[in-house]
Length: 340
Image 1 (spheres, one colour):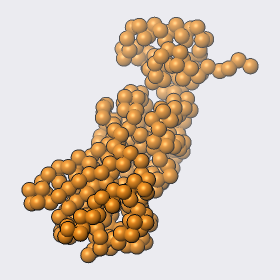
Image 2 (cartoon, helix red, strand yellow; image 1 turned 90 degrees about the vertical axis):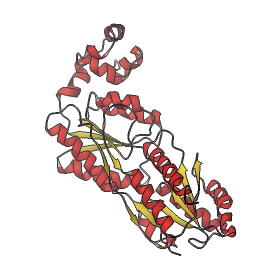
Image 3 (cartoon, one colour; image 1 turned 30 degrees about the vertical axis):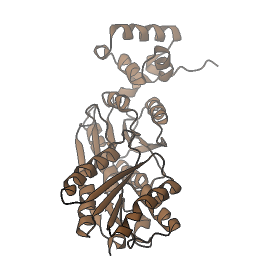
Image 4 (cartoon, one colour; image 1 turned 60 degrees about the vertical axis):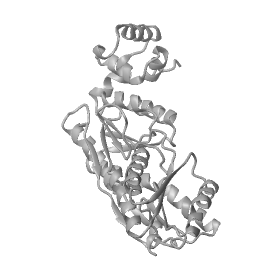
């Protein structure tokens, strides 16, 4: 049996993206160079590709399905976002395909092509941060909403949180508790917008606090490993012997848990040795010893809002989601890890 030629096969042979092939098949030649158009035309002819097999129906037929691509589906943050997306989609009669890119830009790109071939009506993406150009082009062809993370180019709908507000709440809380030395712990930024925004917010706020003699430091982890976190704690927690009141802030839930584990292994007592604030109010945050002061993000609402905005555009017959950038507020929940 002759193998059916897919749109991704044509894209690979032409040296362009599937989004470009989609534009060609829909007659949008103004968005590509003449040489590109002719090259695609020759490839389609030589391969015997039938455009109406997949690509032409991509925009003409609704499937009532939404592709959801998450960067780390095992993260409690992602699970809460997914719940919001799924329930919002179900409320409008849409089903979802869920893909886990595992923080791999290559996997993310593959899933985008795979979901295009399945003729989904739109995409909700928590991006890895490595496919900004691809996602911007995709959003020109089909409704896309980003959750939690933005991209650096293109006008693409996104729903995230006010990261400056989150870091500001954490820093203010530490200063109110009498801390005179602040340390921010973050995973590697790798073009991931919330990580970048939180680190930059801390730099700005630390510079202001320095006027009043507040010390500050930032530690970035390429990989979140207990041993690496323990080494950093050993370096910075020694300040307490010089009478310094130390406050540590971790910028996501996975790193927050790593800090608690590393502190226990190393024999540090929170908040006696240092005050600690984490991001994300996960289920375990309130039952750890000590219970964890956190910056709580409205994760369910992030997912639900993004899905509703995407579907609103689909129901109104729009080919693109409105390129609105929503930043939802966060809140600080004070618990035992900062009470001393």
